[in-house]
Every structure is written in C-alpha cells, then in structure tokens.
Amino acid sequence: MFNLFTAVFLALLAPAGTLGAALAGSDCTGTISSFDDVSDAVKCTTVIINSFTVPAGETLNIKLADNAIVNMMGDVAFGNQTWEGPLFEISGKNVQFNGNGHTFDGNGPFYWDGQGGNGGVTKPAPMMKVKISGLWTNVRVLNSPERAYSVGNDEPLVMSNLTIDNSLGDLPNSQSDGLPAGHNTDGFDCSTSNLVIEDSIIMNQDDCLAINEGSNIVFQRNTCSGGHGISIGSISSDVTVTGIIIQDNTVITEDQALRIKTHSDATNASVTNVTYSGNTATGMRQFGVLIDQSYPDTLGTPGNGVIISDINFIGSETNIAVDSDAQKVAVNCGVGSCNGIWDWSALSVTGGSSGEIVNFGGIEDFSQ
Ligand SMILES: *[C@@H]1O[C@H](CO)[C@@H](O)[C@H](O)[C@H]1NC(C)=O
Ligand SMILES: *[C@@H]1O[C@H](CO)[C@@H](O)[C@H](O)[C@H]1NC(C)=O
Ligand SMILES: *[C@@H]1O[C@H](CO)[C@@H](O)[C@H](O)[C@H]1NC(C)=O
Ligand SMILES: *[C@@H]1O[C@H](CO)[C@@H](O)[C@H](O)[C@H]1NC(C)=O
Image (tube, rainbow, N blue to C red; front, side, top):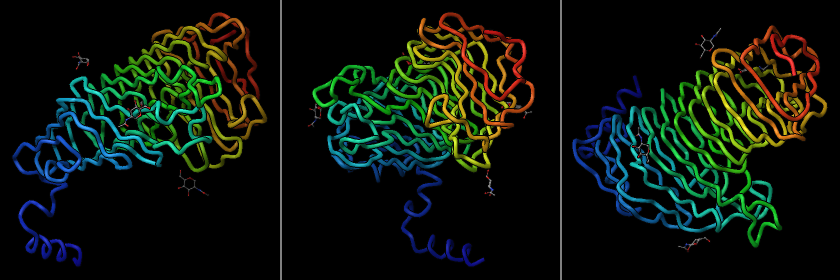
C-alpha cells in the first residue's frame, strides 16, 4: 500500500517521461552518436547507435524501455584505461537489438599481457554485460580485454549470429613473455535461465561457453576455435545446472571439446539433464570429453559435493577427433557423486589414447 501510494505520488510530481522511462518508452527515435546522448536516447522505443568512442574508464550503460528496437549503424570503440569495467551493459525487457554486423572494439591489445585475470594490469571484465530479454543479434565483439560476454537475462533471450573475435590474442606480444597475449577471454559466461545462443563464431583463448548456473539453456550451431571448449562450470557450492542442450556445434583446435568441471571443495550443488547431440570437434589438444570433479586441478583428487546425473549423448552423433597425445574421454567423479545411467550411444571419439573413468560405472553404450 505504501509503495503504491509512493509511486502514484512520485508520478504526479515527476515531469512527463522521466519516471517510468525504464518501462514504457516514448514513441520517438533516439540517436546515440556520443556517450552524452545515451540518457535522452533511451527514453525512446526506437534507438539508433552511430559510430563513436566511449570515454576511457566509463561503462556504456544502456537502460532501454520495454519493447525497444535498437539498430547499430556504426562501430563503437572503448577508450583505453586499466580499470575493472564492464565496458558495456544493457538492460530492458523484450528488446530487439540488431548490430547489423557492426563491432564493439575492446582494444584488447592495450591490456593483454598473457595473464588475463590472474595478474598483470587490471583489465575491464566482462567487456559486455547483457541483461536484456528478447533478441541480441548480428553483433561483433573484437579483442575483449579479458572475458567477453556475461549473460544474466531475467526473461527469455536469444543471442544469434554473433562474432567474438579475439584471434589476435593467440599471438604473443611484448608484455606476454612468449605466451599468447590474450588470456581468460571466455566467450559467454552464463549464470542464467531461458537462454539460446546460436549461429555464432567464437575465437578466443578460454572457454567458448561457460555455464556456471541455471536452467533451460540451448547452445547450438556455433563454431568455437582456439580456446578451452564448451564448458559447464566451474561449479561452486549451492548451484544448480539443469536442462542444458548442446547441439550441432563445431569445435576446432581447443583444449577439449566438451567439459563439465566442478570445484573439488563445492557442496550442495548439482549438474543434471545435459544433452549433447550432433557436435563435431577436430584437433582437440588434451581431451575429447572431460568430466572432472577436481577443479581447479585436472584429474586430481575429486570432491563429491556436486551431484552429476543424466548426462547423455543422444540424437545425432557427436564426432570428436583428438590429437595423438590427447585422451579421448576422461571422467573423474567423486565417490558416489555421479549417479544413474548415462546413454552415450551417440558419441564417437577417434585418435589419442583412452582416458580413465573413475568412481562411476553408469556410462552405457560407449567404449574407448
Ligand atoms: C548474420 O550476420 C551476417 C554478417 O554480419 C549478415 O550478413 C547476415 O545477414 C546475418 N544473418 C542473419 C540471419 O541475420
Ligand atoms: C588504445 O590502444 C590500442 C592498442 O594498444 C591503440 O591501437 C589505440 O590507438 C589506443 N587508443 C587510444 C584512443 O589511445
Ligand atoms: C543449497 O543450495 C540451495 C540453492 O541451490 C540453497 O537455497 C540452500 O540454502 C543451500 N542449502 C544449504 C544447506 O546451504
Ligand atoms: C531436460 O531438459 C530438457 C531441455 O531443457 C527438458 O525439455 C526436459 O523436460 C528435461 N527433462 C527432465 C527430466 O527434467
């Protein structure tokens, strides 16, 4: 009652168009050609973004009206400054954002030192914080300083036809001591539900996708190259991941194609109902499939505080080719924490050597 009264009272006092601008927009076209244009432009339900550079040390924070339609007509670059970021943030319900192939340029080479989030200079991360529902399409992200997208939609969101191009970070630079200059350049970090990511290209040096928490997530028809593959995790305490579909993706020259990683000390968490179907991977450097409960170690002493169940390779065949010194499949479960029967009848892995299956006997219709 108090809240309703307060809201009505404030609405009467507020000049038209200010209060509630985050909900119902005005029927106008707002144009963003500089950082200072943002606050006025987002009052409109139609927004155009022209080419400009965001001042160093600022977040381009676009808080859209419900049902807004946004089109990029030029590229946006971010000024150079060592700070925590994010560089870009966007929110709004049932929004349609079309990049029309235009680019957000993070100027990664200014920051890259081969250390990512583990040291060196402070790097803005994530570069792109997406909180809208609706559609985010045809956007190119170039050279993220560290992690590229973090996704946290409240209502259903489709992200399609995107490019994340951090391929330049594969090369060393003068600061990286011979290592690839880009590091921890995750493609999509997702702690969210009701999300589809499809038809996109991700070139980077860390996870292509990392699902940290959430349900009803589909990742399909994407191409990942250069990094650490398509991951669920790393899973921490008190987290649930369920209802995940990973299908028809192409994975090229990554450490592993498909991975589930859970922290060895995590408790009260679960990863259930994950379906892999129709994926193709070539040139895996370490593993084809890796399910490991010893994170941050690899194949170390596993914890058993994260339940893993109902992990299946079904439908169209998933075909993975690993390098000669890589392992086909390694599964490192804690005692009693991997449960049930997993149908792996639609998985084929060639090359390399067989890995170990530890503390679990429920994988059916697969041999390596
Ligand atoms: C995908 O993006 C490309 C390049 O930006 C563009 O030419 C193409 O029309 C887009 N496809 C769809 C379905 O929007
Ligand atoms: C930011 O850094 C990049 C890469 O080092 C450089 O090419 C660019 O000119 C710099 N931009 C500005 C505005 O200083
Ligand atoms: C277990 O995790 C759930 C969230 O998944 C949380 O609500 C609950 O409080 C946690 N239980 C304990 C004992 O920490
Ligand atoms: C598993 O996840 C799929 C995809 O989200 C969903 O359709 C299905 O109902 C789930 N199955 C169970 C048993 O929860």
